[in-house]
Each structure stands twice: as structure tokens, then as C-alpha cells.
Amino acid sequence: MINRTIYENLKGVAAAERFISYGDAGSLVGLDMGDPPSRAEIAQILDQINIYESRQGRPMLSAIVVRLHDQVPGGGFFECARDLGRLNATDKLLEMEFWVKEVRKVFGYWARAKKP
Image 1 (spheres, rainbow, N blue to C red):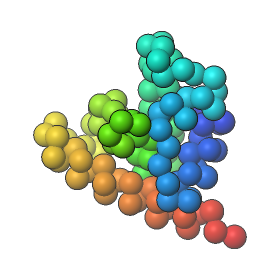
Image 2: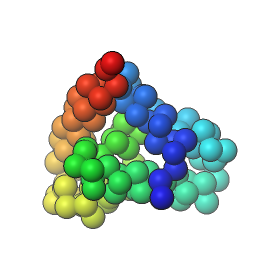
Image 3: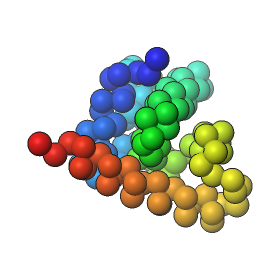
Image 4: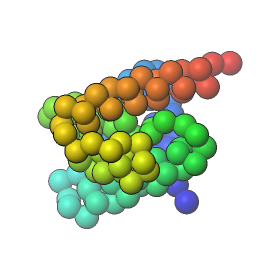
């Protein structure tokens, strides 16, 4: 089961074509990214959302969740993409290319889905 609080928030952020930090996403459910167990929990929550979205035929919603210091996703995003069969490469440049394309798909899908 996915975390509805984070899921609904991510949909709104995506519809606005914006990004959210792991810290801000985690704080929605009381997680502190300075705490290793909280980091593991947010990773699991985001993986579950990506699995759900994949089953619905949609792009990986967590593509819009980024690290505060460099504004890109953490390694877990790319691991999840490989687990879902969406990414075969481990090369950093190819990972970044995949991420940029996935962000465009997320923005495009949710911007359309949220229009009245």
C-alpha cells in the first residue's frame, strides 16, 4: 500500500512542474532526513509509489524528488528504475539522461491529469 500523504503531494508538485527535496517529502510524514532509518523509510515509500505508478502505466513519480545539495535524485531512484526494467545502464551520464526524460514524462502526465 502506498503512502497517500506523500503520493497526493507529489502529484500536486508534478502538476505544477516543480521539484521537491527528500527532506520536504519526508517531513510530510514526520521523517527526518538526518536520521538514517528515516532515509531508508522515505526510500521505501518512494519505491512503493514508483511500483504503483508503473503498474498503472505511468512514469516514475519520484523522479521529481531530489537531493537538496545537487538537485538530482539519489541512487535509489536509479536502482528502482532498473528493478522496474526502465533503465538498463549504470553509467552516470545515461542515468542522468534517463532521469531528465522521466521528469519530462512526469510533468507532462500530471500537468494534463490535473487540468479541469
